[in-house]
Image (cartoon, rainbow, N blue to C red; front, side, top):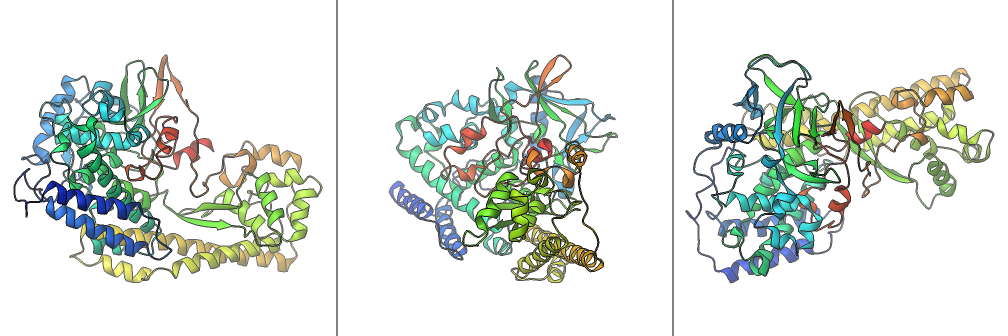
Length: 594
């Protein structure tokens, strides 16, 4: 999380390649805003649009060269100031220090033995940068009048960060100086590095991320220059694309939700020092203590002196880690790829299939996940595929037959097939679908592995190829699993094996089991979300820890909408803001609800 900057940015005001008039710059910005605000390109034209937008951005960056506000010293020179500032403000700093861990970047190193579940780190509210602190800052007047800022807390945090970075008297300066000067999010990729992601599932999000960031920058550049409420902002004189890209990446890789002081709602925050922790597999161990009004973190495991202290970011896929955090996690037990499936409305049996799916709580068109572990499909996807492959007689049985509702409960249970023929159909379909998806890649897995052996491969290129290879590995595994399952059920059919029968007691048992494939589908929250939809979490999902009310900073919710989506979904952030405290991730809500 604390990657060291590999490229030094020029000092403010030096080395500008050419003098550009305000009018000329405004014209370029207007052109960029118009290009980014045009209708979405037709299928297959997204890369072409990206090239055009990137060309405009590079033209702007060239004219802004040397105008960004940066610090003279290197990042590590400010870590001692960060620790001193944290101590002065009531944070705990006696059990660790900031250390460079090579390829993992900067992280926290234990300076003494720390026991598992020991409270070793707490950060008081006054150290946090939040939407509320932005409202009470120089950004307040503009915030009160701009609907984008009001709707998108992460955009507010990005501009808040820039304003405080330019303020030599900012109370957060020790924290801001300790942040990376550059990031490894795809916003920093060279064009040829982004090109390596073509045909991957991540590429559409990467292209959208760049387009939306460019559009937001253009929008706020014009707003800062023209809005009366922005007249006192330090951004009025210098507000470059590189500035905004840095702020977006800082927020995107670090943002969290915490409760407001009265606990009535949640707000977005940047949490100094704690955000230096790197990721590993495990459980969420961070929460917010309302009584003491501070963020608290307990140790994920036992740590010996000089060992690195890790936290668990949540059950994110590697695509999410690459896009939103800027790294690839090789030992990711929660990696997955998305697959969109739907029943065609032109199909003769559409109405019947849609009704059975509706009774099971599943949309007729949905984005599912194929997982890297066993089983590769969830109970929800199994249920969908069973209905998708049903004959008319089977559909009638599940709609009108004896104990039809009880049968709905078994759709996601691997132990109760609809029929041997149905199982053969669904696993054949999955096997072929995974094989077809593999053919969309321009390279094979063997070619990717060979490319990773090249010693001169850039970091971003390596990450892109690793992600591409990980997607293929999951699809290969799903195809292989589908083939094995198909052959297994084909043998059952040939042997004339009897279908397992369930009793009422079996249904009751299913309601209390923890196994994903045995849960009654209708009693579970749908694991995958329909494309374009968001899962709503409970507004106040809190727990009592002793006598203190503690908000767990786990991924009970979807990640807050990323900064780059501001101008697309101005209302979504308010909706997200009603959810409980979260660590940066998407899938833990699904795990928690299950």
